[in-house]
Amino acid sequence: MENIHITKNTQTQKDILKINQYEGWAKRAQEVVFKMHRENLQEMLPASFIFELPRLNASGDFYYVQVLPKNRILIIVGDAPGYGIMGAFLHLVVDRLVTECLHQDEIHAPNEILKQLNTKLNNDLNAIVPLEEKAQIKMSVCVIDEMERTLTFAGAKQRIAYVQKGEVKETRGSMYAVGTQMFAEKEAPEQTIDLEADTTHVYLFTDGFQDQFGGSEGKRFMRKQLRDLFLQVHQEHIPTQKQQIKEAFNHWKGNENQVDDVLVLGFKLD
Image 1: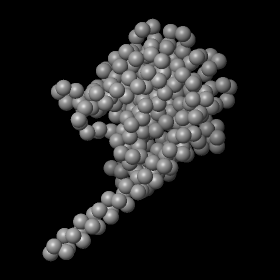
Image 2: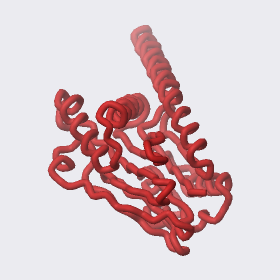
Image 3: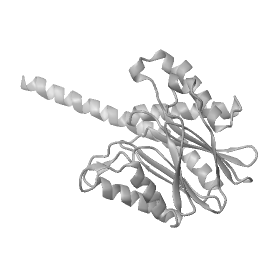
Image 4: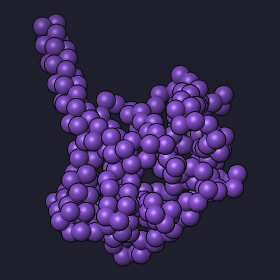
């Protein structure tokens, strides 16, 4: 009986080691893609930062940055379901599908990108999996026109925040995630934000920060407190903003377990 128990423990340890190895490879595969998008962001929008904190090694939160014709910049922040290997797999699928939208389908408008992704996910991926396993991905899609100094936004169960005239504002997207029939049946509204001097900073984010438990009463951080944090830090230099956002998260979390992947991308037009 003791030998059987030892054998089971040994097998469990081997399984855990394999999972850790697989997750390590998933993280490395993601990092190849993330590195390209970070470099694109830094080149196109030097006044920018990314604060990312995966719950596990690999992440379901992701970003995509690419130059578009006519001096425009595409920025996407998304949240795929699951953590670790599952999240990384879905991220890499979506990254590939976005690239197809841009280069094969020549689709550049934020709402049209979301619609095309929804169609591709439903037809190619979700069609072959059970309902409870369907990929439902939350996304913010922004196109920045540097010449016109405007930002056009469309979202799938996600929103963005921006600071204008000393006030933090939000722009909401569709109520439904990409990869759902409801998203296909509803309009994906586009909204345009003026990025003139009064708009000092734009923030794209997933829900991991606001859903984190912590503080003195072990409650969620909540979206309002996150908006207040953006307002509080927006006048700081870019590296300071990132550091203060990181410190605010860690201070709030304290000794609590991290509940989700965390991602905040902020930028300012020079």
